[in-house]
Image 1 (cartoon, helix red, strand yellow):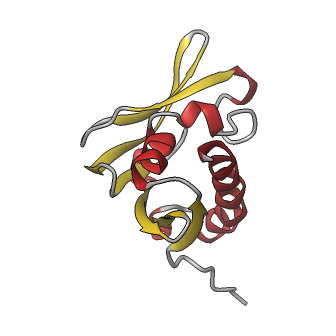
Image 2: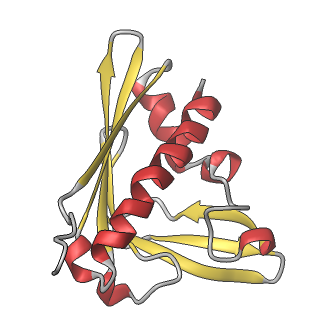
Length: 149
């Protein structure tokens, strides 16, 4: 018997108690300050920085003391401070990349940040990977919320 795996887009929403401009800047320009590289990176302990090259075609790159460790994805949309989209394949084959879109909308008390991660059907382990990312994005976005205050 085969069990159907859920490959629908994963949607995560958080609210940060800052304006839209600040929320976007914290997410994109200060990623190294909040991303848990020790546990959510290709290089683990060897990773010390991640940078988003802020323009369409720019990469998201993980760095260590000896330089580049891995490309995580490529920006396909860059519309500060409203949204960004990028392929997502940290340390994996780009042909199996998912797609992540992050939007920033003003709300009472701050900014609602919504992350949509789709494209699970391109991965050989789509349903299993989605399950792992379901909790992984919660953890990572929790670190972002703590930082963006």
